[in-house]
Amino acid sequence: QVQLVESGGGLVQPGGSLRLSCKASLSIFMTANMAWYRESPGERREWIATIAKDGSIDYARSVQGRFTISRDSAENTVYLQMDNVKSQDTAVYYCNAHQPIFNLSYWGQGTQVTVSS
Image (cartoon, rainbow, N blue to C red):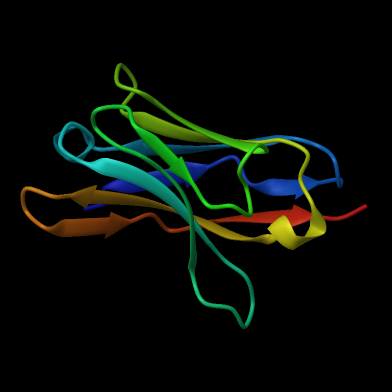
């Protein structure tokens, strides 16, 4: 059963913008802290942003000031707005849902983001 479905990846020029979406099943979304990670070839998966159930937000320094995470409870969806992208932002981006009450974590299938002119 698919729990998280990502969309919105693609090719974008340096300095451009892109918005990623991650739609979660209702049972997960209501009880989870939602986050985005990314993984570049040959690199470890890197955490980049979290939005908790209470709305608190945290960012990795590498994206602070350029990326914005948000969540829409009506749509069970978390977004990652990527602005002023750089070539080093090229990666597969993964949505993560962590349910503290159950200590369970779910991952999306990943969406490719390529920053290139």
